[in-house]
Length: 168
Image (cartoon, rainbow, N blue to C red; front, side, top):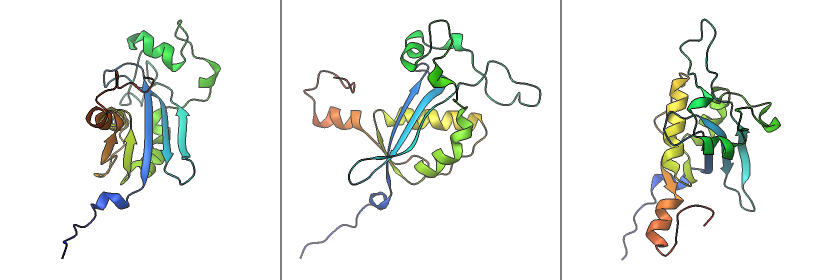
């Protein structure tokens, strides 16, 4: 007789694929693009795929508690990669970008109690956690957990790769 172990509880949670782009590797550098896809049988369905406006450098009276950010503090390569012009202006693709807090309800609905899969998911989850808290958004205990990171999986199962970058 074979004893069967029960399936881990997370196997019944929805799968979400996540990717973020940000203005530097320091946690305090804001998220400027976010994509969340849902697992689907034929192809993934998009839950959210948006450009995100960094916080402004100053806030009007009454909003001083909200985060601020100066583009001069961004990594120049990250600025270019994200679609900013060298002079700090943005391409027209950013004309309708909103701050992260505007997307918070959709982010929380998509990632709470989900299995999150991505490239360096711990970075994405920590940055989301940091910036949502900066806006005063309380995160539920099961936010973005557990995560499954393709870099970790590749390092363990594909040691022959020259790099862990998605482009290699």
